[in-house]
Image (cartoon, rainbow, N blue to C red; front, side, top):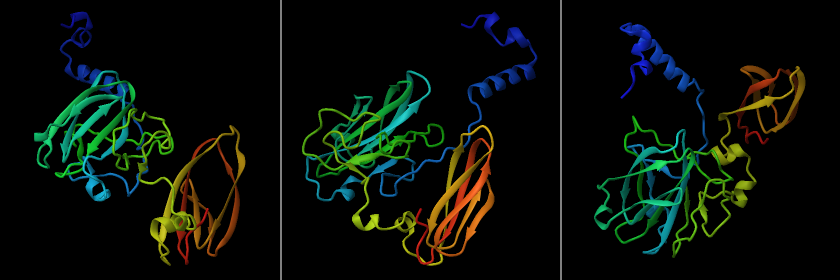
Length: 297
């Protein structure tokens, strides 16, 4: 029971507007304004279904897998506070086991392993990053499942890739099928090349893709198409300094710094520009037109 001296009533009495203002100020203090955070994701990775849960279509991704083989999925999620309860909704098409921070919190039963059966699994999260590993086993009934939030409106769940090489990307890593379970599960910050698991989507390009520019790998060689690249960079000198930006284009290219056009070229070739920048973060946008190829670097 809250003591009177600890209540808002002791401060504001029956002044309801003042009580509401105090509550609003407390909420704003605990939830400061933050800008949108954009995360990269891999189109070849695990995607979401219409219910916002992740769709592990492992039977389609590994049609050569044998009955009894195992595939792991690995991600992580953040918790601001310790002992925060989190509930997920799992649909298993075959045996599924869920691990959080190395501990098994859910294992499907034979009656659960059907496409229309949903089961909740819950645990208490630690403060900071929490490892989530899903263990799928192939049977004749299926291979994979769905896993995610119980409510896309009220309980937001975004899995972040936990490996050192792709930290910060949205989504999951998933392993090629194995004949036996691994003895040690991966942990956040670990390299993808440690241990016995071979992770997908592939981290490297094919030899043919390595010969392409980044835009060609994304969109192909389509003459006349225009694409935008957006990034930010930091000017660390406290006084205004001259900075140099260099690159090579294969067609018409326009550079914008903080929304202002600072460079334009219509022909392929190497470019270089110098500009004065103040201390702090700056936005860089590149508009590139394929003719016949895209900007290289």
